[in-house]
Amino acid sequence: MSNNENMSFLQHLEELRWRLVKSAVAVVLVASVIWYFQETIMVNLFLSMKEKDFITFRLFCKYFGVCVADIPVKMQSMTVSGQFSYALMMSFMGGLVLAFPFIFYQLWSFVKPGLKLKEKKMASGLVFYVSLLFFLGILFGYFLVAPLSVQFFGSYQISNQIENNFTISSYMSMILSTVFYSGLFFLLPIVSYLLAKLEIIDVEFLKKYRKHAIVVILILAAVITPPDIISQIIVSIPIIGLYEIGILVAKRAVRQNKAAREIDK
Image: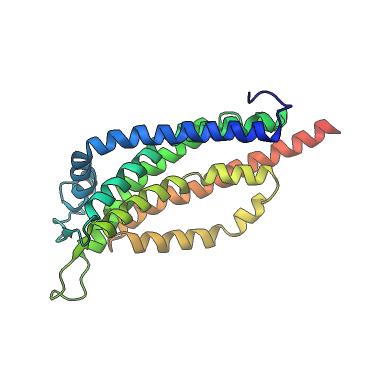
């Protein structure tokens, strides 16, 4: 159906509906598996972030000499349905993340037939690169940004008379949002390429605001990491690298546009 260029508006809507249904089914199936193993996943993947034996903290201690103690945080649920709600949220977010390549493939398959041949060539391999960068961002968020944020905010005290008792809602919201947005942030090179290809931004714009971007990245790294320079550098370098990669792919897009104009002449 998707290859029929003479489809009516209602037929397009019908195809979009079925692709969304397939995506929703994929999310539900993955979420169901996560729900079944909810206790194991919660304890080993999320609650373990407040322990000094979490893999990130062990590697920091072994290779950089930055060691942490167990984070003095007590977890509590403040509402009747609190634990159920966040088990549900964890399952849904996990399903959304793990099914992301399939969801993106379905959306791309819907959009692709409406593109010109040149546009299809431009976006060759898009599903693979988007999925790869997204999962790299998820790993970056899970193993670096999220545990360092938990360690910093969990250990921070204005006074030793105030005890850190996190609600499960605030704890899980911070981790899940940090990990998910890290995945989206890693799509920056793809966004830079497409915007440059569509001539919405140019390379000079990215170069001009490079210093501003680096300052913002360093400030963010300082906020979300413990107050030591090693942690800040480890978090900052990949993000700055993504910005530089964005400039490189934008340059490539500009060269491709120039070459296409020469051929048209």
